[in-house]
Image 1 (cartoon, rainbow, N blue to C red):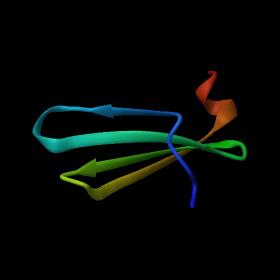
Image 2 (cartoon, rainbow, N blue to C red; image 1 turned 30 degrees about the vertical axis):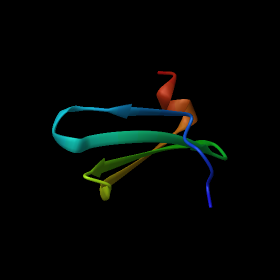
Image 3 (cartoon, one colour; image 1 turned 30 degrees about the horizontal axis):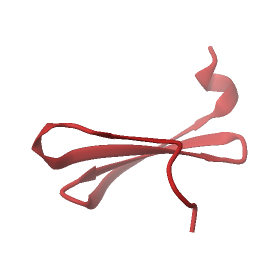
Length: 49
């Protein structure tokens, strides 16, 4: 269990995305109609560039 996301956004057509911070990585999970469609991971140091 990774807990609640740092932030969560809803878009048109049932598309949603949530961001979780795990250790030194940011994990972004995309959903369409409550089904996971994509997982994107980035190191925190890359996010500040």
